[in-house]
Length: 247
Image 1 (tube, one colour):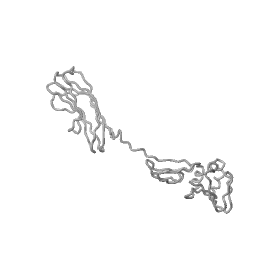
Image 2 (tube, helix red, strand yellow):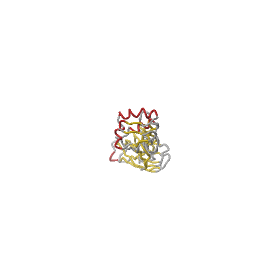
Image 3 (cartoon, one colour):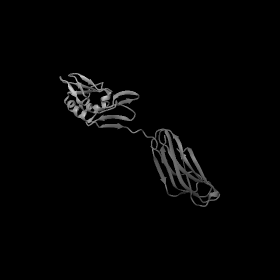
Image 4 (cartoon, rainbow, N blue to C red):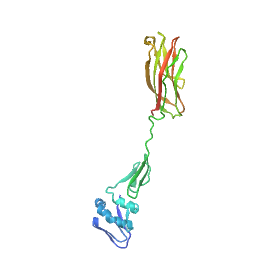
């Protein structure tokens, strides 16, 4: 970063703050040691009138700056640079539009206030959330699997997902078994449970769990199913399915 003051007039201009003179129709390169003095309130007051009048033009070593940019530039006391991908893009005050990770645009207004437009990082975890429940009691004496509740996803992207389940089950015919299972797309059994004869007290027993599954893009279904294994009655209530994306 360079700080150069250009004299556009035909007479020399004295910069009292740093005790130096800008020759007529020439320029003055400011030493780094003088940056702090140049940025002082007294110096800014002294230079602002001349810069706004066009008598002094501030140059950053690459290009002439507007009056607003020039005043803001001389207020900087450190050689701040903007880098993108390891490449020096120039002085921070003059780089108003650039591309970088998550940065859309940088603007500086007339008062020197910078506004940075930053995009939030894309979030995957927790997206595609779906929940369904069936709280009432359902009962069957059938040996065929019965659906208690089904969760249907939207058209999801391929990825890893979490499916969670919970329900309460019971049966009333010792020693036969009540059976329950969690199914994916009507073809794959994710988990299976049984309520054996030695558990039979005609009360309800809680079941819950979850599994991480890798799914292809598209629509998928999950079901909680239940059945009896002989001639008793299997009951299920408070059945819930919850689904979201992991990665």
